[in-house]
Image 1 (tube, rainbow over the protein chains, first blue to last red):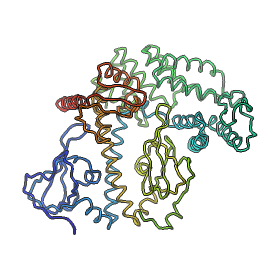
Image 2: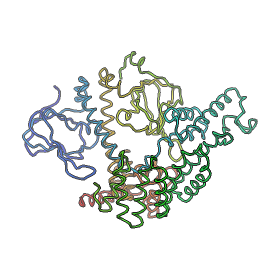
Image 3: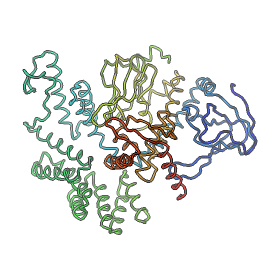
Length: 346
Length: 217
């Protein structure tokens, strides 16, 4: 066994939080506590190391400051290894590394969840729309090969997604353009084939066909969402309103109607038009009692009441959110609001 | 890292230069070990593609897919003709048996990732945007091994939306805070970088805020 055996008296410190050190320790006998403050609650936590357990591993491997103070509780014997000695030791036994990997990935998952719980839905965004947007970026910059990959990936994961039609259309355009680039004869989708290389002239807006129209809705809807995220609420609201008017008689676009209405409600809240927002969301819930945004609609009604100073009504809506299944990230937000209102959440 | 031929036969993939290996926001269950060639990792920020890192043979990337069900946080693109081992959670543990060195390298990567994630969490637990913005600069300084007690101007190749990302706040709000900082001479904002005049001042703001917070608790 490599390393040095060291004896510690009770009350001594093996390392302090914030120290930087290359050593990894194994408790042979005695008792050692790891003392640290929890990041989210600030409370002091003490973990007891059992005989045979390693400690100081993560900080030594990452070459970062120790996260905890290692305090000796009872007279102890500790095996001290350098990182290199530790590496030699554990690479002889994969199962030891696998145990560490299990522990570390659990920690990583836990911290990741904590991080996400602090982020609003709007920050994590809509992955489907964001993926499509990456394709748009590459297409705009004439990186067809990359754009092609992204649209194909989009269709692979979201074959019935909001932008599936557009992705398909762009793929056809890209294939044509790439082919054209190769032979120099392709001109069908370029406006002025004589003046500009075909590949640089893919026209994206093609609302001529029937499918073209529904794609147009998706584009506009997405533009509205984008305006909202830029905090241009007035513009976003007007765009959604116009779009709502334009498609309300169009049966093929029916799936967009509740989505658009939900966005309009969000705009009203952002614009501080609370009474309108309440009646808007209430109407939505009546019309589409099974919509995926139902829970968020309830939450938003609560928010609107809160801003109007009606605590009791706000609280009742936040409680409705919590009672409704399945659980979603909105629950946490509702709980937070209830705590802020001084109401217990359960 | 030694990897026998049979490994490549089973898990090997090749890519041509400029091929996307995986794309930001794409769901993904595989991670990769680079065998030959280079791979760059990019992210589109403010409508510009920014290279975050370049990987060389022996490097591992995309490993977060083993842990969490989140979409990719960046895009991986082949620079050269590359050879990769493409692995997932299922064949990962089998692979580890034969390659303890790989297991150890991943252990090191995870150790660093935990530190990074906790550091990010520290920013998010602060009570107000001003101190979050200050702490984001401190974190960026730490990542570049710059002392957070520096009183000389420090340049960060960061844009407003990146700072907003680390703070978990809306870009508009962070822009306002940075505007106030700029008005009071704390920082200078350029198109592609932000210069912080006195990091130590930010360090003090953040540590005072944290002290107040722990006293409340």
